Amino acid sequence: MSTEPFHFTDSNFDKTIKANKIVLVDFWANWCGPCRALAPTIADLAKEYSGKVLIGKLDVDENPQTAEKFQVYSIPTMILFKDGQEVERLVGLCPRNRITDAIAKHQ
Image (cartoon, helix red, strand yellow):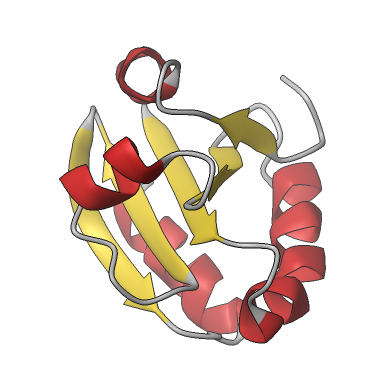
């Protein structure tokens, strides 16, 4: 497993979510200041959880189908999936411990 955040797209999303037990997806856009502020945390989490939890990012501008499917209307939004199902959603620029607490709850 990579130590970099996985790059989700409309075409690889469903297959990747189903192939991994626990997945955290950061729905973001390049123009979004809070999204850019969250990026280093997402990168750190990808390293920290490498081999345990797939941490990835989905650009909502480039992949509108998936963002719409999960009704992501505010960014950043992080959705935690377990066994292919959404189990938790964090909206806005969350502190690192709030994200790690959500992950720990579902591991």
